[in-house]
Image (cartoon, rainbow, N blue to C red; front, side, top):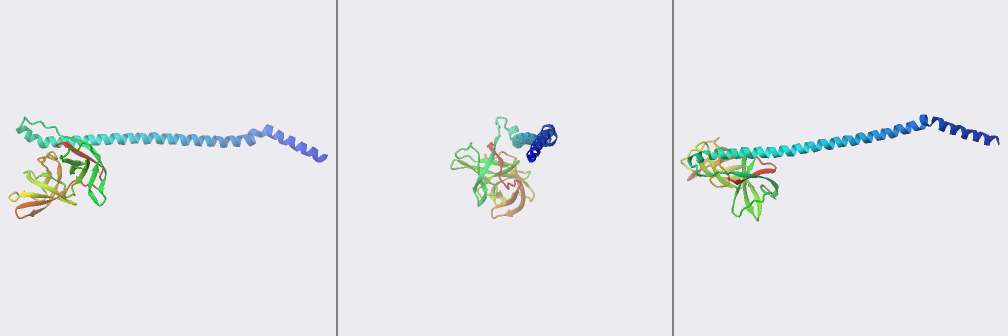
Length: 249
């Protein structure tokens, strides 16, 4: 009986403690833990929201800058075209000159064993038309129609051929791809070519417009009936990305 009374007394004491001390001994620790979890959760959400906003702003800025770069590059290239054609226009005012180009991107290599041929995302192909290909303001190759797909032949490809001028005197020549270099062939033997002469497109082949820089002469070769010149190209296309295609030279 005595044990039963002590048990009842113990229960009463526990109940009183729970009633009058719950806030101090039990509720406060639980509340603090819950509040800490909620605070951490809110901070994580805020950080994620801030990161998302920052990322979106950076992405929008990058897209905007890319558009501006492409626009400025096109303006610069077209300025070169107009400058190269200006003298001819002054002589023949009846000619209407409207050069144009489009931005395109490389999709993939045509063959993994040949880094000088790429498929391009370009829909403006014409049956027998060859287009000029530009990279960062320099000539980069040509574009041909291969089974109704746009194939870019970069300047290292042996089938990349177009017309050029050499030096200030505009010595004419035909340039061919040759792996890391290019070679100008069929230069009349009586014309003097110098190492260091700058090479640029002539526009006579209706592929490029006149005045796009190609490279510099590094070696002069005397052939049997004509002169050849080895050229180090300016364009270095390590990983193909975005190009300009000359639509109207």
